[in-house]
Length: 376
Image (tube, rainbow, N blue to C red; front, side, top):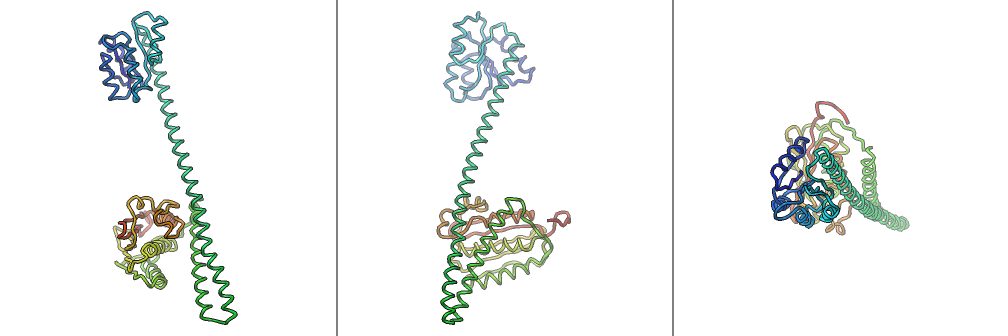
């Protein structure tokens, strides 16, 4: 917007008419005092300012404007009916003006100057936007680099832990073999197997992250009995975690068109997290139901819970809640992978939680492919 400041209504009308005819938005003020009030409330790209006005003259107005942080970058063109001597021109520039036009105004020259200032303004604004975007990108890359370094450190530790345990159990097994203690051997082999399974899951997650990043995470979608899959998972998880009752609610007998292995991966992640983050919990509630031709699945625990801030970030790659990171191991990628899987099934995933009362993680996916098209 352009602000015209002149004590002569005739001058204002003629300038306004020409500028508006050329698609410029125009505001006007008939005195320096009125102009300053408007400048405090609005932002202007350009001010066309008459030098000789009663009260505050144009130079005083320009000097006052330069003191406003909001308007100090606004371009000012001075107008004067007086002969443009060197002293007057010098005063105009020192007061904050960027250009000078003598009256009577040549409208063609004025238009050229206005268009030039507008072009400079647009270029400056575009440059500022680029600088802001560049700073944001730099900060984003710094944060990504920090998270990557942190992830490498955590991953190294997480991979080293089961490897160290396996090495220790193998050494103990060698001693048990010398004693022919079959029961101890069986027990220690079982512990080795558990550690290998942990290592296998960690490596699988790392491979999935790599596939997601490269766009090579494949899906083999077909119809399968969701409830049969769930019953099998619950049976295995219950045997592995006898200290927790896994209670199933709802009944879902329909087939679902999805990647069975990937959906199993999400369900196991939800249940494993529910057990992990509710170390003193006695029950886990699993709910399955039909909602408008979609299957809704949730796992509810009664553990430590999390704040609303963490709920919004928990599906981000490498995100780990600082307050619990020392207490609970993990790479911070499991839920990120789950989100990718569910979104690739055209579904939604989310969490509801209250600190110290527990969390509920859920997903909802269509039971049939969109428009009946079977695709991956």
